[in-house]
Length: 308
Image 1 (tube, rainbow, N blue to C red):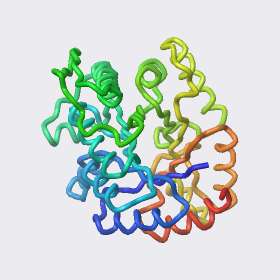
Image 2: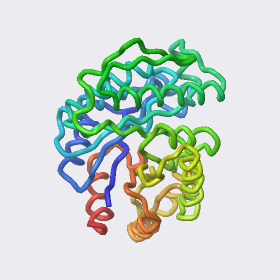
Image 3: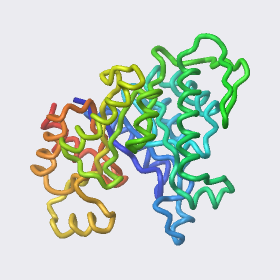
Image 4: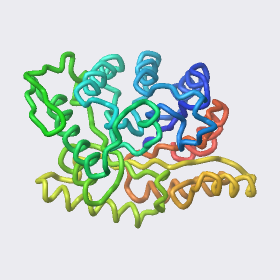
């Protein structure tokens, strides 16, 4: 079983991020993940001046300072990431990390950051159309040994090489989100990693996971793919605490529900055990761990050790 950590890159400093990553590298953790926003979400006007580190720059630095951890984003926003440029950057990070990078991308949702930086924020339909076209283009670049020509509605390539390309095997593509009609269809056609996001509010139960997975399987059948080719992962917001009142307040303040694991040691171990029994390949624990290295170390010693 593999465990990852979503490390915050907002409202903190690079030195703080570096210290957490160094701790993860020494611990039982398998991977580290960063968000990709230009303003601290969820978009409170009074917080817009707070730090928001750029996601690709952070992950490139992490690639150079680690040897064990896999890495990626949860997830890149396609609306402000030209897919060919994002693929070129992905290949560079994959070279730096010697094959430890996952390319993770979603349709984009944070309207305010688009307004702040002057980017177009299309309709949901267009964002989904753009995401599918971007994933198709990126997959071709990652898997082709020859230069790629691509003519789509939104993106195009003219005999474009990806050099250097992936370090070894083609860089895996995670398609962010579990929308049943479009996002999971895009994943079935062009992706390699499924991720059920506990921040999105759905229940993190075996039944809910199976429900979404079976929809993905139907899309895979339609696309002529075996669903077993796709890696099954979840993102679970988590906080280890014995303070019941504080846990309830945090859950309410963040709008968290059954998709999270907030509470004492035995409760979290039981929650994690349920998800493992449901057949996932990796659990990423989300950002309410806070950005303090000692919290990640405590989680490692008290929770991850139970599954070693």
